[in-house]
Length: 409
Image 1: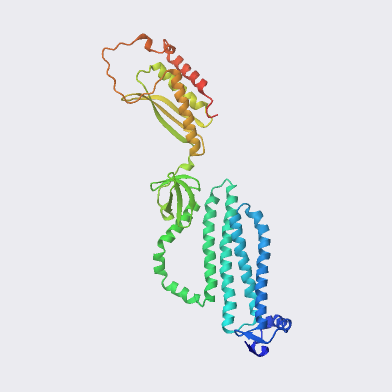
Image 2: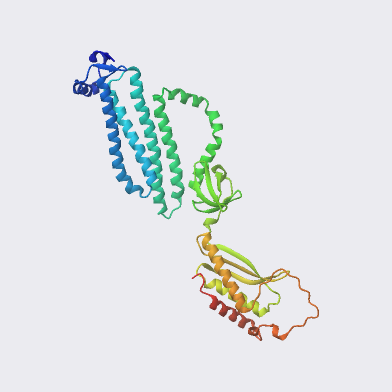
């Protein structure tokens, strides 16, 4: 500790700081004229007061934002907490950086306190901007989910990542002078090495243009089932560099956006109808009347469902197979999701099995049968098909289908 003349050690303040400077001196005139680490006692007290005011400002802004963001973000508690904390730090840094000059620090102390406060303010402000983009993205995602358009589902994550890059860039530009780095020579060096930088960033630029192509051309939307370059799955996110696809093995595949400008994209999510094609193999023992009844019944089952396309449906005896009479079923489901399609197939196939049992029709499986002197037995033919015409067989099959019908309604 050493005594010194307070007025001689402290330089004259600037015009805009004169009032506050004189006020602090007068208000703290009761303190002893001593210094510690070349800082006067009144400056230490003033430093404590500045720190206290910064903390008060932090608490006030946290209380205010907690009420405002609680209504905007709803259930996003973690994002809200991080944003409020970051903004509170930024406000505290702003208060410290604005009030510390009134304490008239000098030399190393000036660099440590005032310089540190400015660096802290820039870092906290950058963090607050980063968290703010997350909060804005969460709010926009919630709004996008309530709209019918799928374009905003792509734009929201793309815009969020773009804003984050801008926030980091602005933070770096503001932080560089405080750390003694000069931006102008750096920009000049980038200008000289622009060609090399362009070659190095070629892939990045291609991916960026690819993401723009996805937004403008819209070959798919988030949630669509697509197939591209051997990858089959659901689009989960479109980023600045790549598009992420969740496969049906639950793995996550990243496809560079540059490929999207030239690759063939098969978008199953844009289908109006979902095709179902099957060969129903019947045993060769089946009579023509049974086949007519079966085909008519299967078609009636398809027509009775509410989730099928009514103008395109074919149920016809198609080929003579090695071990079966093959009936072609060709129809379309009118549903939005793959899960609905699977459910529809399940119900329709069960109804076809019930129809076959009701008509006495059996499905074939690969077998080889040796017939030696075998004669047809009169009782082998189902009694329902004795002396029946094709028209009557069709009516019988339709009637059986009506008994089974009602599925998918």
